[in-house]
Image 1 (cartoon, helix red, strand yellow):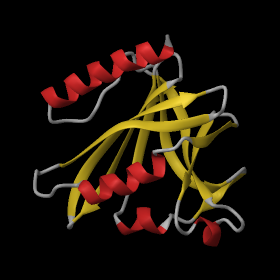
Image 2 (cartoon, helix red, strand yellow):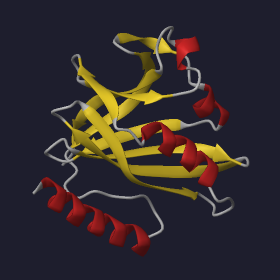
Image 3 (cartoon, rainbow, N blue to C red):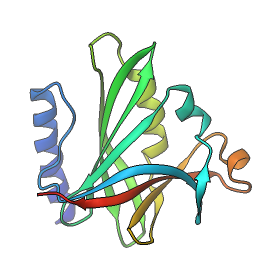
Length: 172
């Protein structure tokens, strides 16, 4: 049943994304989180920006979810060839396993002056998953634990780092 609903969602998203040049969308967005820092596993202190994200100046923005909390839409920006690219991705959570994975993504240049494929691949590779996620604290935090090349240097003994988002509210 869940796979059937996911297929319908992907078909709807695919149709919408080809019909417009903007970001991907998901129906029924209800909750919004905003990026606030990188973390090391369960340590909730600020960690350095991973090299691959710093190199393309990734600026994570928000993750919105539907009422099930299974379907998420992540938005970010990055730079490629000195130009700004918008990035959006549909993520699917498995709340039983506490994992999240990338379903599809889209990147495009704000001024249509670069391809945005290199940066899209970097972010896609980090989020393709399935990646563990941490859900903790008050206000609620969502940290997607992504594999990054210098995780062990920033977070000793770790192969992943958390891209941490904090709940900012319910959408109307």
